Length: 553
Ligand SMILES: Nc1ncnc2c1ncn2[C@@H]1O[C@H](COP(=O)(O)OP(=O)(O)OP(=O)(O)O)[C@@H](O)[C@H]1O
Image: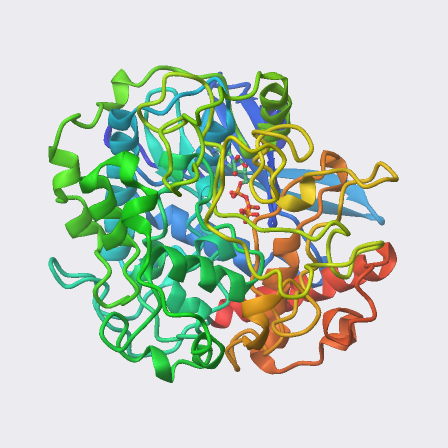
C-alpha cells in the first residue's frame, strides 16, 4: 500500500494502454522508454525486459529486480507500479514481451551532471545526498545490497526527489544490518565480488574480498562536486592506484587484513602514499572532505554507514540542505542525453586563463563546476588516464599505453590545452569529459575503440609503468580479467557498445572457472575484434549464464 492506502503494485496491463513518447535509456537488461498512460495520463518509464535467450524463459535477474521492487516501499526508492505485457506474433506463436512500469523521473544524476545548463549548488548537493543516504539506510536496514550504485542509477525528478533505481544486481544480504557507530560491520559468508561498476568499486572488492558488506554501496559521491566520476580507472589495477592516490595506500592500520586478500600481491609493489583527498577537495571545505573521507575509508568495517552519514555535521553546517521543493526544475537530462550536452559544451568558449575551473597545477579541484560555481562550466580536470598516441591496446590500429608511462595521474593544469587526461572540450581540447576512448578521432576519422573488456593485468594492456606487476585477485576476476566499466555511446546510439554486458557475462565463467574460449573471447588475446556474429552468440550464451549465476549468488 502507498501513503494514500492504495495498492502500490497494480498487477499487469497491456502495452497498448501506453503511448510511447521516446527513448530514455539503454541498459544491460532492457531498453527504457518514456510513455504516457492512455487511461490516467500519467507519464511513466517502461523498461523492456530483454529476453536474451528465449528458450531460457524470463531472465532471472529481471525476476529478482521485480521481486525486490515490489517489496520495497520508500520515497527514495523507485516504485514499480505494474508490469505491462506486449503480445506479438512470432514464429507461429504468440510471444510476450514484458515491461516494468515505473513513474517517469526527469533526470538521472549522470545526465544531470553532464548538462552544462545545470549548476549544482551546495544546498542542492546536500539535499540529494541526504535522500540517497535515506534510501540506502532503508535498503540496508531491510537486508538488501544494491551492488550497482552509480550516478546513472540515481533518478531525480523536477520536484527535487531522488530515487535509487536499477535493482538488477541487488540481492538479499544475510548478515546483521548496519548499526549506528559500527560502520559496515563484517560479513560471515561469501558473495560474488563481480559486482559494482568499476569506477564505483570499493577497494576491498577490487582486492578480491568476498565477505563484503553494505559498505560496498557507500560509494564515491565526490562526483556531485566535480561533476564526473572522480575515480575513472582504466583497469582494476589502475582503479586501485587511483583510490590509493586519493586516500592512501593500505596498511594493517588503515585496512586491517588487506594483505591477506587475494589481490594484495601486486598492490604491495605500489609506491606508498598518504593520500591527497583533503587537498583535492580543498575547495569544497573541511566538512565535505571529512564526510568524503569517511565514505571512502579503506577499512570497510569502519567505513561510515548510511545511518551515521546522515548525522554528519556536513549537513548541519551552513549552507543548509535545500528542501526538495526548492530545487529548480531542469530540462530532462538522462545518461542517453549526454552526447547532446557534450555538443553544447564543445560549443562553449574555453575557460578563462587563470584556472577557475579544473584541477590546477596545485592539484586542487577548483570550484569551476562545483557547488559554488557561477558559470555553466563543469570542473574540467579529473583523475584521468593517459593514452599513448596510438590509442587503445587490442583495438584496430592501436598501440596502448607507452611502456613506463604509468597509470593515470591525479594532476592537471587547467591552463594547458590538450593535455592527455581529462581534457576539456572538443577532441582532446578543453572541457571534454568523455572517457578517453570517446575523445580524439583517429586519422581515418574513427573514434578510438573503448578498452577491450579483456584488459590484462600485467601484459600489454593499460598497465604500463608502475602497474605492471599487478595481478587480479585469484578466484575473483579470473586472474586476467577486469571488472566492468560504465559504457558510453560512441555517438551512434543504435549500436551502443556495452562493456558492462561483457562484465556481467564474465561472472559465470569466472566464478566457475569455465573456459572463456568457449565464447571466442578474451583470454586468448586473439579475438578482440569481436566479430558481430560471434559476439551475438556469445552475448546470448553469456547472458543466459549470467542470469543463472546471479540467481545463485
Ligand atoms: N523511471 C525512470 N524515469 C526516467 N528514466 C529512467 C527511469 N528508469 C530508467 N531510466 C533511464 O534509463 C537508464 C537505464 O535504466 P536502468 O539502469 O534501470 O537499466 P539497466 O538495463 O538496468 O541499466 P544498467 O546497464 O545500468 O544495468 C537510466 O540510467 C535512466 O537514464
